[in-house]
Amino acid sequence: MKSKIQNVFAITGIALVLLSVVAKLYGGRFLCIETVYQVFAVSVVIQVVLVLLKKFESRYFMVEILLEIGAVLGLLLVAGVFFDWYSSIPVWVLVVMGLLVYLIGCVIDMFQIQNEVKTINRYLEKQKE
Image (tube, rainbow, N blue to C red; front, top):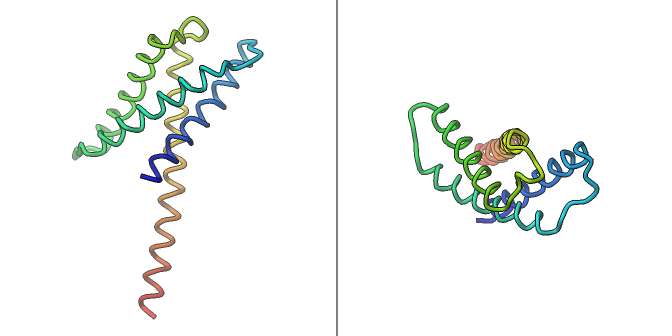
């Protein structure tokens, strides 16, 4: 549970940083506070959906990845309509941002898994002794 909450905050933080960069590129001067809450809410929903998708297992790794990416992008597109994000950002920019956040999240997950493997290996070495 703790890691899921951390993931929500990490996703939200990464998304807000990317959103700030994109807003600056489009000449924006500020980020509305309601956008922060909207991004947080979408991050929570995305995390819940990803947890549910983890229960689905396929023989093919790429099928799982494509399902996750499709779910994330689908949720972002629906959120864009629901929160009226398309009045200030093009659809393709939202899709690219979603893909970037997903990829950055995967990289962070890889580092976490690598640290867990190191910890487990150290624990196993201690048990051998």
